[in-house]
Length: 512
Figure 1 (cartoon, rainbow, N blue to C red):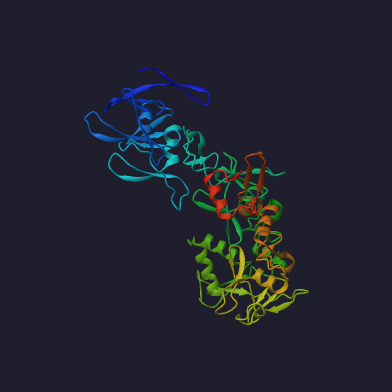
Figure 2: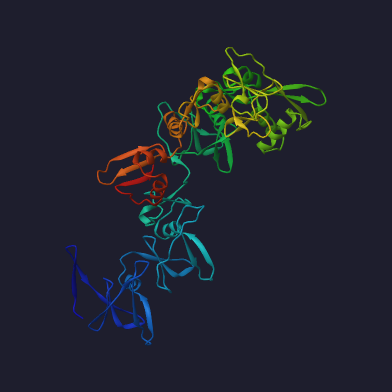
């Protein structure tokens, strides 16, 4: 057959023709055309955007064939490989998977829990398995000299599984950090791959990624390996000499989230107690440990110090269990724990300019509790109650039939006008346990989030970049809500296009 030349967008493409086993009476071209003699066979586009047609094989049997598949085999435009133990499939460099038997492109799907594209394959033993598409492509087309386990999509679009968009990384949970003036890094003892700074940050020193932080009883922890470590202790061990072998690390300004070197010192329990300020409303109640045999009394600054003591002298490792047992003793629900009696030391300090109001004024079904403008709550017996720590905030019981309430909410509703009916109470200094009226303000959700970014209280937050496709103008937003509001794109629509990586109107959304 004579060579046919076809023009496509002013580029001359030389059309080539080949035969395919089983269909020797037909010719297939690199432009996905089919000929029998001088007659061209009509093709159709199926639901997978692939060309198909009906022809007769060499046995005379009529069959519907995937023309696109046959032409890709005869004239490969993309590199493809076979995945070990899955010989019925061809894996292409762009993440396309062809079933060699059915001659169709496999569909990918996204599980509800794991936000990654997966594909169902049958291995050579006949087992049906779900596999991560990005891992298949990366394993076949990328080198992994460092043995990393995680795959990152460079453009943030999980739909784009071309091998050039994939990269092996150490972790998907960590973020590279920006330098802070005056920051000094030192190795963490017995953990040679990690460093801690005098600014209270922890990183992997090999890839300069910050470790993910979590809140635990109001303190900041990081996970290294299978263990969790308090950041304030890591900083103190690395930077502060402790010749007297003092047992605990004290936050000088009583802000448990401020782990900068200047705010820390090694301290005894008495030194911690002396540093208790009135500002936080006595939210960390002191506890006495009483020896059952000798009646000897040991004073602890708060429940956290008791937990540290128990963990250092027993085999107990469950901090929540320790806290529950100690508090049960302190509230007369349990007689002893860990072979000691435990009692709260009531703090009835009189604070200048403190004003008390009935909680019943804002919650009529509450019992006879009082709340003060200094962030303290007094129960019906006249005792100061700090309740419990929930997500870093003080939460108190105020009566049967009424859910527990955060102290900062009680203070704000009792003492701070809210004419705009804003839904959030913000801690101005970032200390969730400083419930003094001077540290609280009403905010919208957006204002609350913006405050966290402005004051660097949420350094690990993910920001959003919006790019105007026409003008190439880029703008960074602290949250998806802010970006959605400014671009006037409904939040569900915004999330859908952010997730897919596809442009919406003239905009493209990306996590940064």
